[in-house]
Length: 150
Image (cartoon, rainbow, N blue to C red; front, side, top):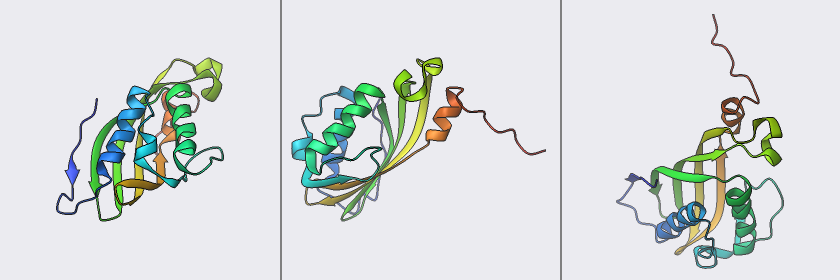
């Protein structure tokens, strides 16, 4: 489900359609838009493994996101400045045995995320992501939720 609120509409950013296309690509599993959405030297700063620059590197991490993690995003908010796009989204998936452990596989979770893109013209040039991975571990039962203080 893609819902959004655009904030900062007084400022335009020609790359906003590219950022939205990336989220649609993740949700559909069709990553073919990346060749047009990102720059040749695009860098994803949040990857858990080294990536080559550009569309090929982004395709590698997003293939992991879509095929291994099975994440699908619901966009909650987005705003843009002259050279930045920020998207707050909720990632939905089920725990994967290869990542979360066999005993937790198949348990659903919702992971709050924030994505920051630096843009160049109508393309995305860099990505930083903030993910509530601790909350995921708590939701699937791999880590206890702390008790409130007494």
